[in-house]
Length: 400
Image 1 (tube, rainbow, N blue to C red):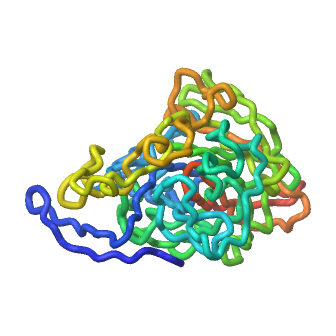
Image 2 (cartoon, rainbow, N blue to C red):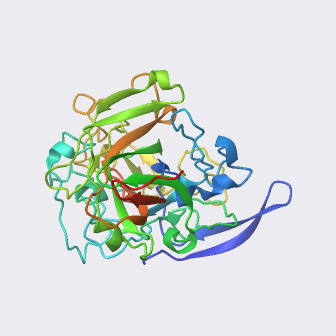
């Protein structure tokens, strides 16, 4: 696991409040897409059992750029805890390991000396930069996870708390609780958390996920027997097929619910992958270190850790890439003519997305862990959540 080293100093902020401020030795900036599975309840959302996160509360996490997992879970409270902070970053396709470097320079390759894979995804499944020529310098996301779904490495199949061993800009943080701390691996520290979810073999089952910030790509649900080690290899053996070519958009008021078209990847992307249905329409498509050209300048980004003394955003100042990198398209978000926003009048915090899955009929009944993996396209990030479920025979009893 290639995590960039850090050194820490103790500074005093405000009224004698002491925080451990990790000063990075390398550029580890650039984390802002966040999402999580919310149905079934996950091991990653265990902090929802604590008073400060219970009952659908969303206190901020991190001191550099405080952020939370605010979401809506249909008509029920969205007890997310800190589940949207379990992820991996610095993960390029074909690399042996993630680097932890989430910087978003165009065409940034995390392992140029060891590349073992090339993009495989057909262009019709892209979620951004639709007008770039495939494989050209304008195709700035070519090494990111979604371009060859499931082939980018991860730190852990159930995610890493905060996405790195130290807190970094942008919202790469995890507030320590009795359950986990920054840098912990989900499969190692998160205990089984029975969700009461029971699926019948050969049936259709419902799941939901939410986002707090999006960077395109796609996702997959998969199973690993609960008695086995929760590794990426185990989950990849049992991807689940989708049972519908629509998503249900779930609001707090169920009268507003409606369906949108789903795009299941059927070529060039492996089994069981779904294109992310909500596009990133921003024209700010990369991060740029303003101090490269002007050492006296600092990124004008307003967050508690972005100013003196740490200037945490300097290597991750959002910008229009074409201004600094010749040949990069001026607009590398989703083309709204090709991939329009599907939930008019609402932002991503207003709704959950519900999917239908096919429960295999040819697996043993028993306890399983359901994994959700989201491979981003516009960043080198992979989000991972794990939930406990039970699968019974088609004629088996379901006791709730």
